[in-house]
Length: 129
Image 1 (cartoon, helix red, strand yellow):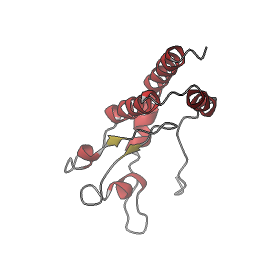
Image 2 (cartoon, rainbow, N blue to C red):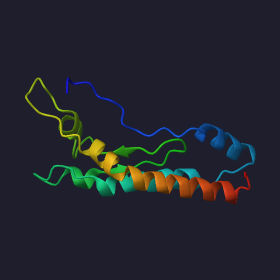
Image 3 (tube, one colour):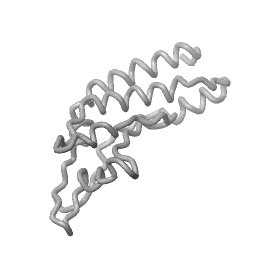
């Protein structure tokens, strides 16, 4: 690979419209952020970070966004080298270990199932269908 990072995420058509409809009916619940958090945790469960020290494994966490599932690895003080491990550093001879992209690829079927189930239940709960 030539150092180009390709976004390997999933795009969901209609998610923006669903969020707009939820706001319109006055839904201020945590349903969508909880769904995105569950999806992030599915990806984390499939991740196999490098195990030299085990430090990175303890810093993986899922965000709670309304429009996207985000998985973060590393903190400023602990696991701050996560970006170098994942993306590599050709200037210092560090090869990339794209463990999170492999985790997303491995978790894709479970992520899609959870998305379908979660969005269907949110639509039914708010009587949008």
